[in-house]
Length: 103
Length: 338
Ligand code: FES
Image (cartoon, rainbow over all chains, first blue to last red; front, side, top):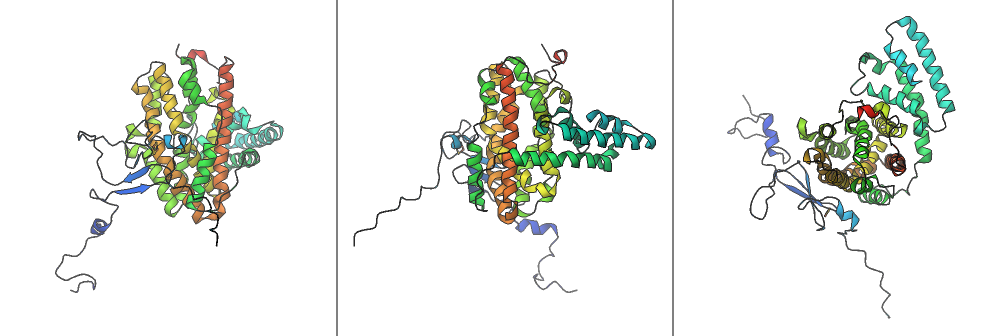
């Protein structure tokens, strides 16, 4: 019996399911991703815990959460959409064109 | 003509079916020809709503086979043609951005942020009476008891990043697979908490045409592959105008003395929709318009139409309330709790 070329002969053959173990988006150990949404919150996906300052776990209400980074949410640490009302900007305004330096 | 539709759906004899179908076609054509405003036409919007309901939970006592019956499909098509035309003519379109995730998301945030529609949410927070709060839930029940379903039609019609984004939003709408966390179920709990009947369709006859039009618009956008840009834009605009109003609705019910059983639905939406609006604007609408630039126009049409119709519905509701009258079509006070 021959092993497939790409598999070392001294390792058990891979089951179909095992391929998911290498995939970052599956399983309980899935790494956390944090995406910064422009002018808005940080979206956190994956397996994570959010703790209070005294270490208690804030029970997760959903798989993907939005963390406030504008500081005005009434639901902190979560975003409640208030960043729009205060015109929160994460990107600096493009600098005003400078007058050319005198030669 | 909605009566003619029901007569057809209730018949079980093929002999009368032909006659009833002919009558229905005639009445539909006449109603479409005569209507002063399709968005405000109780009869036509009810007929479309009933025909669409065959695609959702069905109609009690009506054979499910009618869902795909050519007469029913023809009825939908004839109303949809005029309905879409009216929405395209009347919903004010913003200037279109270049197709791109950033540009589309930014333009959607600008469009929804500029929406200065009348504020039912502020009224609910500060002024609404208990009776008006009941009316508010009755009006909402038309869509909210099947919350998320019209947008789910789009899942198999999208590909790639946009599909994944829609699934991420919808999974959360359906409670992450937990029945008691499904948003439609949370809404039913709110209704029961104030003593209303949460049976799907219970209040259809009590709401004005514009409320049915709002729901019909979503089904029309969702159930046509051709309009997948519009349903994506609709969802984005819907989510982007939701967090803050829901906070105010919750405050209104708290002011009226209701507990967390009633307000949880609203509080949940403040947090959920702040997540959804980001995903919907960028990953759904932005990606879709980038991957299929020919859909850019429809993404904004869907958003604009949603804001327009819901703006009309809100204005009517507020006008009625501030005039001291009911916002419902036919108030059957006996069915409302005292
Ligand atoms: S980032 Fe959304 S409220 Fe702060």
